[in-house]
Image 1 (cartoon, rainbow, N blue to C red):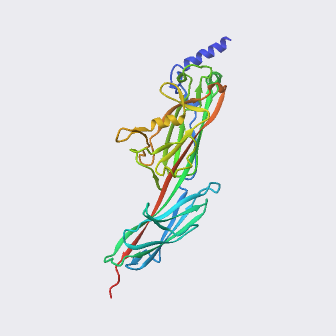
Image 2 (spheres, rainbow, N blue to C red):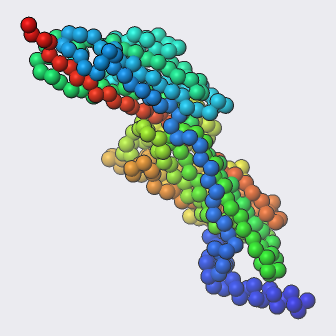
Image 3 (cartoon, rainbow, N blue to C red):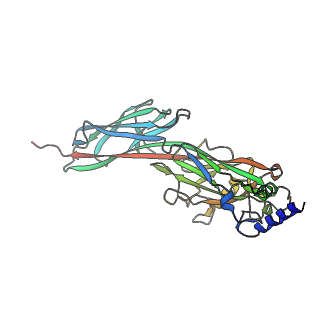
Length: 363
């Protein structure tokens, strides 16, 4: 009995200095030795790619002559993924052609002029690992008097959803004390799995396992937990189509992000967990999505509060939330749960081809 008391006293002394466990009034001097990092598994970024762009018969055409433009678009998704609807269009001809008409589009009617996008485009359904061929017929203007270069632009646009899942492990404070008092080590490496798609949601929970005092039923802030960071990155070779941060450009969803047609320039976000909650400044438990939404709040030019996200380069800032277990009484020893994220968005990928229009040969 005396030996147990001595070990307990030694344990309390060790906890009196060193690194602080988030949301716990205890400190552990050897955290780096017993707490693990994060193991990240990440799938393909670009799922739709313009594989080639070719001018036929040549990238040089004379005034009044015809050039055909051929684009090959590839769906790079893994076979088990769902089909994707892709809009493929010619968006820039430098004003050097008197007519641009669509001639062919795989699995669809030939491209036609769209008054809203100002592109000669077609919409086709692409299954994983499939290829689409699109062709346009361009007639150069008659009144070109000097050799003029142009970079013709082709765009592939589609809506997509990307998912991620992060593991969070909790350990009972009393159990951790027992393990350490016996001279044993305790380590846990969190996992983050990120699905296919160019725009990816990241969840980071460091210093795992998160220590929970499951025997305490008082203020949540004193019952243990940790810090979760969330951010979004554009890992693809294209552009995320989203309003700027002065507008309401994020939709926080409670169900899913399937229907993006009603919000074509907003990023849809769903983040949550069945077992992990966030903690607000008053110490009350709230949904993780509510915490992230609160972090994204800003004001527009009129002073109205909006939910907006701002990309700095290819990444957003990190949004941090305190987290804890929703039901701490379940953590008798150790328990691992998941935090999931889903984002829905519109994405566009472009490719250019340098061509030259020459004046007619004068005889």
